[in-house]
Image 1 (cartoon, rainbow, N blue to C red):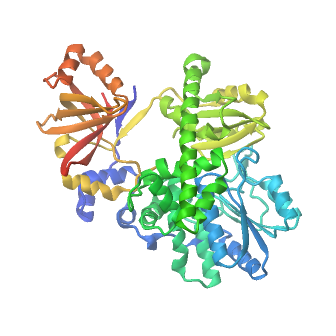
Image 2: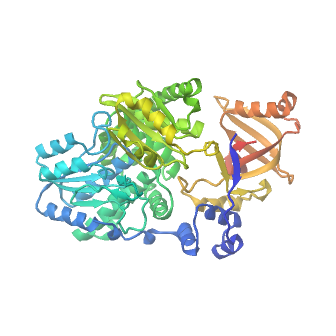
Length: 587
């Protein structure tokens, strides 16, 4: 059973509410998102593009822009090397479109997930050299490609790295870290330890967007022209699951406005194919509807197909590519469901269940699905999860972590097992010989400091709020907290001693439970639970007995009292609006 804990961060909520004209509940939620001080609060509530940091502060960014400008003037050939996920695709789109605008001789190459793997590799370097490419420009990769970039330099190419991933390092005996920056002509990555850029959490496409801002300044273009790529940076920020704090929050907030009136044929076609109404794109749609369609191309086909959709020059071309991406995503979902079931079977019926770090080897699974499966298993068991699959060169895998476990740092402690690895605290990728799989599992579990308490799921409640406090005005005010996402999650409320007056199971799959409930203060509300309705029924029967459950299902007073973790919303049905409680958890 998960722990329900109340966020107990302190502040003068009454004063904040008065100064900013908001409810104290809203003030509490914002404080819980680590927004501290009036300036940060003002930026959170009313931040605009003016609050974005000067891109010129980023180490090497002006040098990179000037190198590009000089080589454009000399008509040198530039090749962009991207990545096959949402962030990589949007990064390539931004740089390719911007360089075309600068009349550059530019093309792009996106590694194949299966044959190339992640990032720059020797094949791509040699191919570029044989095709007489003068400048290699990486995006969303390159920071870990020391040897490959060294090779490109030996072959006489100019190399510019733009990336946002962690900088590889070697830890000395005294704990000091020696960072290994690749020998490129310019390295643009705010995570470099000596980079003065004040915000470190940008995605790869946002770094590319910043470079375009500086390039356009150098080229003498109007500053506002670069902002046509804000929507792509916003899409990638959500799609790459970056923290929606500080500068990222402004990028996404303003970028969503641009996305909802986008002139990009591809995005418009993909939104229409997924039945998102015009102007209706929210962060949720990027994360769970549109983004997976872009990712599906890199997983099951080629990411170039998604890029072709974004670059489409007319409606018909865009619709064709959007339809293909939609179909690929449907296939991806089906394959994922089968593999998740297989992974669950292994965890439940082998010694894996005793492990704190789950290393699940699914040799026949499509390697591109490993990350999604790892994420689903992590959600179920609240443990760090690596899913490994068999590939041509051995074994490849992806990991998804929990907040208490820095995946990249823990992998660095056993890096001798890998032929390649990289990533963030919360996600990672790796390659290793098949004979090291069992050793990898053993080593990670031996060295982990995770406790049983760390592995107990935790629901952090923003505000324990009686249902009777909910008003239409408060619900509308909560909209100012959007966009929701990582590090700016949808608020979590809770109340107890809620009486269930009646309940009905609805939906084709019987997975919706609609209830009429009464608060401890006597207020009447509609509550709805989307999930495993049979789990809720089993819980109530176990706690209150079959007779009470049947009474509730028949609409008679059952005496059932529950606690809910919930979110309030306005439900519109047949033109009528009413306050509805969306139940997330129950106890």
